Length: 514
Ligand SMILES: N[C@@H](Cc1ccc(O)cc1)C(=O)O
Image (cartoon, rainbow, N blue to C red):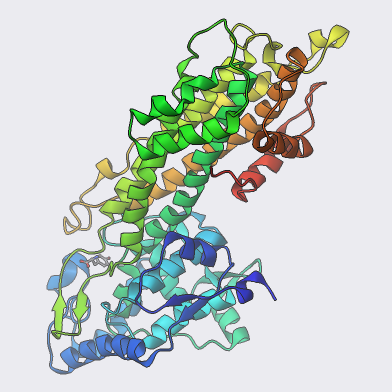
């Protein structure tokens, strides 16, 4: 049995889900289960019935009996109502750019299913079942990443989900790019015919940005811990001063996340030598590491709350209130919270790259590294002159850091008035989330390089100070790194090592929390 089958399914029943639930579905560690509870199913069905009833009574419902967006002044005659949702996804088929990855796509499906399961979108149970089927069979719509302003929902990328539910456009299935219709036929899945409100319900929300934000949150959380561990290594490599992380010192600055980073550094550095006497205070990239990483740590609970509230919201328009029998017209497709969360998160993680880049600058430079060879070269004697150690690696780290910092420009301030000034203020949350993922990718590359440097630096420090003993926790980490990466003695291309370490970072290979 796969782990996906063994573990409790993630249940969609209108109750709250968290980021970890989305991750488990995205990584195929847990299955999606639509609640079979009659009360849940009845609640969903009642929303769809309300729409049908209003239609029978010839009520006017936006996007059901009218055109979309600014075209809401155009009345759609009853004979054409059934065709309208299919036009919605069809004319939004103008996405461009890379396709979302399988992991990202599963997260998108999960986020949309969760929103529609709130029971405020007026969709049928069959639609929820079809979304669940895509997850169960891992039939993944090919979703182009670009083309959403993030405030009429992620209309264009989500049009690819809507089309696939109806057996149109393309999917990834078993590592192949294929026509949805063909895969549906093979699996015996009947394409949906969308009911009046269903095109809007699938597309008029924040599922793409929320999915990407969930994945970004997880990667950023791990990076905060990894940067803390790397800092501990670099304090030893640089013969720095562990007393900068003293408990009493941090007790007077009551930021909980910052205090956690300091505590983790104390645990990693317990038993470490007092540090060189040549400097009473280390440079900021070491001394203030808890003050930099701590900002990210302290922001995470706030960011989690924004992402999870969005995930558990009816991010749609109009909203169907079955209890009062009303259709409520509003703007819940607006992704302002995710936009802010992602614009903030990318700044926080880019700052981590900058911190690590500065630490590397200290430890590769013989003027600052307190007795280690230039470029942390492991070559000695007559071989030393032609070997350049980590020189180019540091240059690459500078490049990745610069690129990450350059991408921190907030997306949310670039609102454009669009769609005949109906969408005259938009969130750009999806662009913010994509930027954030790109920044994370770069920062992970920086962290991979720093792992090579830490492994190299610790060994070279031991050459200078043979009595240097790491505590159990750090010794185990160093031994693990030494297994993954050979000491650089003679110059070698380091790209293969970087790839191995990058994969380990993405797999969160080390248990790091204090
Ligand atoms: N998000 C818009 C609907 C919309 C849908 C499709 C569009 O092409 C434009 C606008 C609203 O609910 O008001």
